[in-house]
Image 1 (cartoon, rainbow, N blue to C red):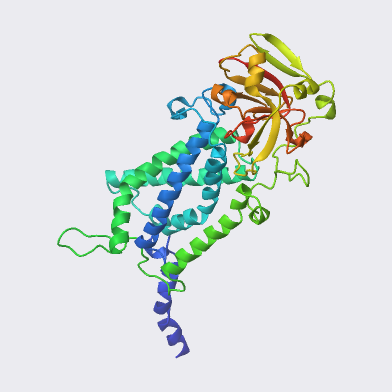
Image 2 (image 1 turned 135 degrees about the vertical axis):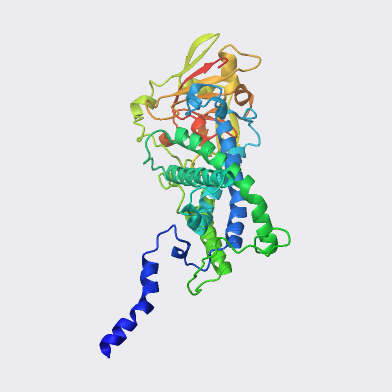
Length: 433
């Protein structure tokens, strides 16, 4: 009798064993009761808005570098037609880059839980066989490959860049630039194919069948779901809570006050400068780029070149010139920014006049004492030189620049990315670039 009971119970165990042998290509492998087209459609529409904002602000960030002005401003060689932008970057409002890049980085961080949830919700479709049932289905799978691969690559490289961790081979600028266009190709194709269905799903709750036929079953729902432990609304709430937590712990680097102290997920490599007039964040310290007191001491001279020849000025001679003030922030590509700091120094337009351009100042090529690293040289457009708030700054907040903030002199230009506000300036060459 015991032996008979053991043999008779084998069929009862077979379903569990067969389930254990299922592969990801088998719909029964995926058993979460949360998956469904409505759940995926909600996440997809959030990503549609968020990723569109990311791409637009990314293009604006690219334009802010004046990429066509000089090769030193553009780290994406061979860009061809992909390197277009619609307008020359303006100098007003002075907080423009602080806003656009702050949005780009903060929204990117906040979207991470949404992106992961969306990928989780459709992962059974990634393993579906056959790979292509028709031309339309093949196009959908290709767009999905570009979209998923491009999104993961862009988010990963972007998050690493925010943390100043360059673990990937090659230049971040080049990789992120080309990755963005691969992602966009998949994004546009996928939206074109899926947006009508997503809108129908959100309106009706289920996919619409053909006329005079019953509604089609939910293609993302598990055919053999496990007992529910969390509703779909609860799952969406968890995703929203994760995004809210990331917002709280990242957005503060674009503001002053308590939020800044809890911005734990944005750049920690930027050193806080302690109390005093120079007490605001920097990315690169003088020690990190091997700027020594001997480089910036009494022997330092600013070289200004133009039609008037080559002129050289000591810091004392620059301080003896007419001084002007401008309240401007520093905003960096990693997403952090400062509030407006009160800078004081010589207008770039006045230096252009000394160089031989008394009327309409041209572009300027800026070179730093820094001997290695990105953006030790940078070009500024003529509209930036003409702006009366564009300074060769010698002081900030009523005190001389600290070494980490660019002593003996640095560039400060309204609405420009931080890397174009060159520190430890050595040479200014005025002329058409």
